Image 1: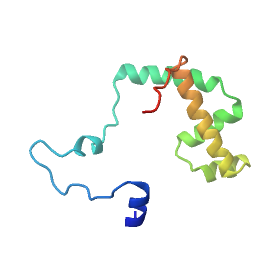
Image 2 (image 1 turned 60 degrees about the vertical axis):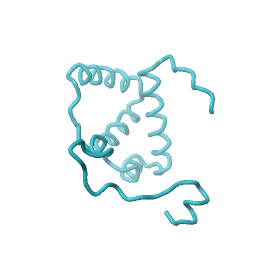
Image 3 (image 1 turned 135 degrees about the vertical axis):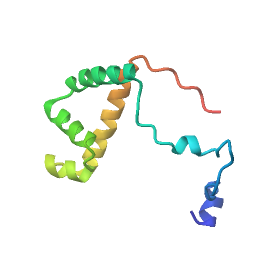
Amino acid sequence: MSSVAQQRRSFTVSSLPQGSSLEGNVFDEALRDNTQSAVPDQAAFRSDFRAWRKSLTRRNRAIVEQLALGHTSTEVARRFSVSAGRISQLRRQFHDGWRAFCDPVPQKESPPL
């Protein structure tokens, strides 16, 4: 966040707005807590997540469960006698596997501009 780093990496750091107008500010919507999903989305997630978990080994299902409960990589690693780095790798694999499960035909990425 130093000025030297900002110049070298071409970014800037600034404060968030202190107040808002009647229309709010640009961060109001992004910072609003929205923990409720539509009922059809909840039902689809429960069904899909259950099916995806069944595709995993028993051990990996247990790891996913521990991570979903909010345990840290270090805690999960200790419980399963592996390194925290391995749990981080598995977390990425789980993420990628879930994404592939949800969208089995990935869209082609646009070429970089």
